[in-house]
Length: 56
Image (cartoon, rainbow, N blue to C red; front, top):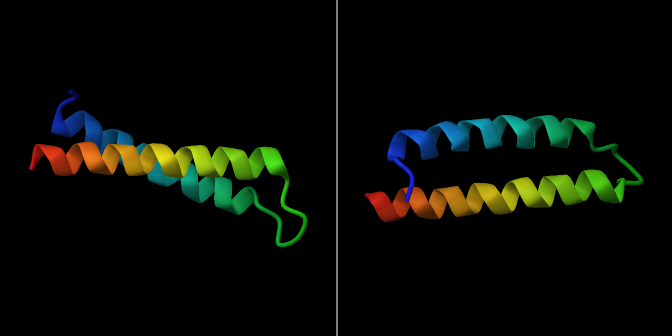
């Protein structure tokens, strides 16, 4: 299991990547690869959150 500090750092990185990916999403005609990236990032974010909660 990773340290709390590393998990928090990864969480921050994921938040940034999620924001950037959402900015790349067009208002219409969402591109499947961009949507897949976003879903993958959100899944990893959820996983890191669960790991952090397990440490507390």
